[in-house]
Length: 152
Image 1 (spheres, one colour):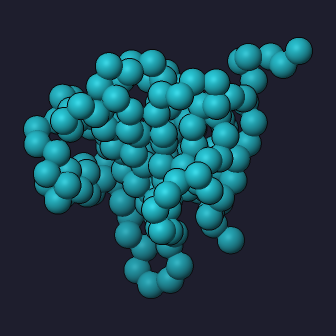
Image 2 (cartoon, helix red, strand yellow; image 1 turned 90 degrees about the vertical axis):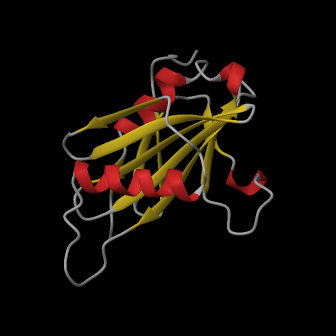
């Protein structure tokens, strides 16, 4: 029997995630062209966690810190017309830092993170129905907080 506390490693596009055992890559099921890498918990039809990654390749390093991540998050929310956030948080850590916020968008709950190790940046979004907003909170936050970049 599998230990429910264990995780498995998922790697894609220069990113490494430690993911709970019931979470799987469902990118191929997303019905939009060039869908971002998408995870979902297979035992619960609740929400999806999507990742868009920008890896540093050359030139001046971005040195993206918490302040820059907060600015990116504000601009993203403005462009998407999400309105005022329900809450905002920052986490300065090692190897990654992030800025996150949550929004009520119609009947949906949207949580957004910008994550960086200083050089590489990822936009992570979680989408579910408003009534299910708390169902996967601990797991999705742990997945994002444990994210690391593994560029070539």
